Amino acid sequence: MATIKKLLFLVDKPPYKSENSRLALTHAIASQTVEIHLEDEDNVEPVLAFVGDGVLNCIKGQKALDAYGITSLEAHIKNALLLDLKVIFCKEDLDKFGLTEDNVIMDAEDIGGDMIANILPFADILGEMEAADHILHF
Image (cartoon, rainbow, N blue to C red):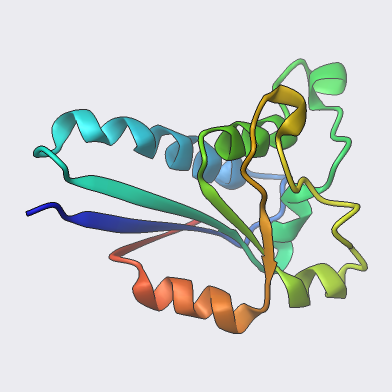
């Protein structure tokens, strides 16, 4: 019988002064390769949730490659969407910082992705947390 393990990568740290956000994104993307170690028809379902100061990771127009010579978190989020990972942003936290859908990375259309990120109230994100088999907090 097939089983699906739901993994929730919860990011609440800002995009500066630590590697937490980048690690969350890298681990969420890499979780897609775990299927080679699973039994037939078993799989994982990663969800990438940004809450609190973590929503600051999702702002469009990051220039990390130009300024520091490293890929931006924007590119990582787009890669997650390209791989069809569920990406969610907390509405209340976006509102707290005055961010709208126009300010954050909602899709990866420019690199061929068709998955769209979701802006959800915290109550819905809490539901995702309750449904998760494992929560990885970054």
